Amino acid sequence: MDMWLNQIAIRTKPLAKQAVIKLQRLKLYVLLSRRLVPDYTVVHEEQQGAQDVLANNDPDGQAADKPAGKTTMCGLSRLTAVSGSKVLGGAWLRRHTTDDGSPFSGYWFVSLNVRTLYRRMGIGEAIVLRAMDQARVEGASELRLYASEDNHTAIALYAKLGFEEFCPPFMEKIQANHVMRCGSRLVFMRKDLARLE
Ligand SMILES: CC(C)(COP(=O)(O)OP(=O)(O)OC[C@H]1O[C@@H](n2cnc3c(N)ncnc32)[C@H](O)[C@@H]1OP(=O)(O)O)[C@@H](O)C(=O)NCCC(=O)NCCS
Image (cartoon, rainbow, N blue to C red; front, side):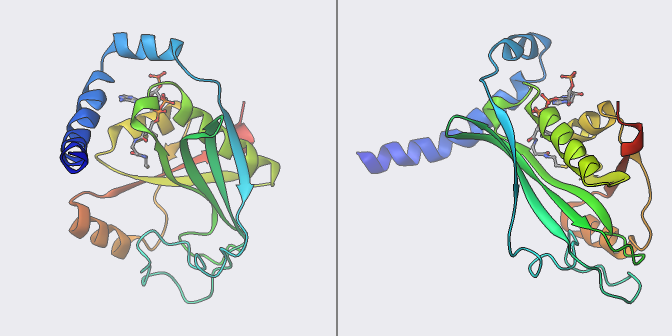
């Protein structure tokens, strides 16, 4: 019996998720969800020992077109939206403070995700704002990120917060790999932190 129930749960979960995502396009849903936001905070935690793993800070792990020279990984931290013991969403902040011309030097905001049921509540926006604050406190002049060109939701969120499209150098191979794997290009965006309100 348990096995059957498990099977039903496994099969219906993706359908339920898709249904919620469709509902989240409705203005009424957004209005209601803004009233149901749980109490949460965005926690920033420095990750120890991540330098070696992410020494190249490269989304596809193969930025072969970049100029010779080692990019130094200076830090990685996790931003997590938590409500009590529940994780609602999170992202990573990566930093390379040595600008050696590598396309991934500087501060990068990556892998933002909010759990489906907690979307449209302002949590994604709060995580990006927290990352912008952290980067600015650390002296960064700008924060960069990327999203698939067909991820209109994420691009709308970043544009709302003042991120503007830009073209980092040496991205041809990364773009080609992304198109081959996902069928779409990456959009690169940056926010000038000196202009932070
Ligand atoms: C993208 C994502 C993080 C947004 O998180 P969220 O908590 O739902 O976003 P917020 O509620 O903070 O919305 C902030 C703004 O983003 C934009 N936005 C968010 N969801 C949207 C949607 N479904 N349709 C259109 N715009 C949307 C709007 O501009 C919104 O501002 P508004 O409420 O004033 O209209 C979330 O949808 C998600 O986790 N998606 C799957 C993973 C993903 O795509 N991550 C991005 C990787 S680059």
